Image (cartoon, rainbow, N blue to C red; front, side, top):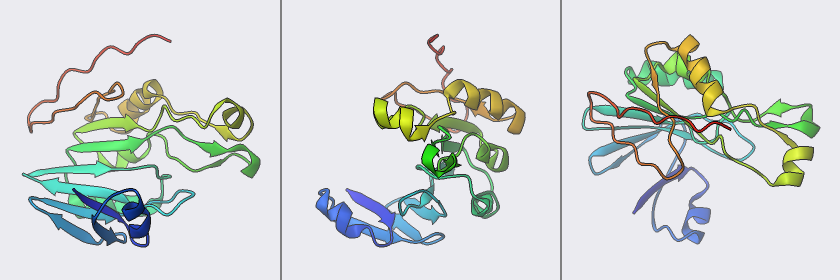
Length: 182
């Protein structure tokens, strides 16, 4: 299984059992069969990149766990149409660091204007004690959908349950499920 990681992280990937590893820095590419994987900038509390993945006439942006940074605006310029954007949206902030935010909310969707946007990384928890004392989250799928309507009104939001597959076929995405009431 090929694995693309930020430059400097191959040893950790090997320790996790991966053997076919390609290291990249932002804007470097790895060709994997019929897919072209381009690293894009990212910023978090650990070394990270995000990815644009192109293949079969489709383009996907995977935002990983990044904070919203200006350098990500270049994704829209470099790749034009984004068919699917997987965007971290929990808005994670570190309380002891004066609520310094380290994960974005929905704002990048307004720049990328993907055909379909899926919020990710919103159900993260560090455990009850750390969540209450150290961390703060303000991103939810519902907030993402509301913000997306304002930032990118032509983009469809798709909320997935954990483990739920998503098929994107170039025309229409499946109808979104009803969100459970909490």
